[in-house]
Image 1 (cartoon, one colour):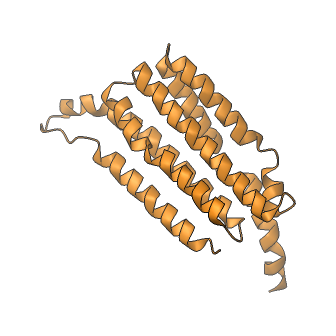
Image 2 (cartoon, rainbow, N blue to C red):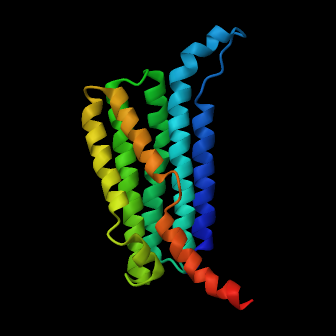
Length: 200
């Protein structure tokens, strides 16, 4: 099964998610700069969510570059990922409108946790098709990076019930870990392309 439709559909959904998030920021009715102050929490939560959606888009793109085909299980695993990503605008607004209160921040982390888990499931579904000895399988290996991120989300959710701003710091830390597309996959893709380019 060709992967192009999966990529196109995923790109479209992620674009819609980002659009919904920015539309949730209410425009002030006043022209005074002071009217922007109440929007700061909403803007900061938007920035954090925009970064996360961008990270998933970038890493999802790189993941599929190492893939030759998909099947029905992969399609459903991908939809599962998109489901959790589609909840980010909701949690973003809840966090922003409640000034980073503990329960909204904890719920935000819960969505990030299940999104990360869904991404891991998608990775494993793809590895199952191509094999553990495939470039993708070798690149991911035991996938310590994903597993450690899930552990950090769990810690952040618990901390959010006491000190929500510390949890936000952990969310940003995980984002920094993933902000550069997975170098393991980059290296494997590079090795696959190098021989072809040398023969030209």
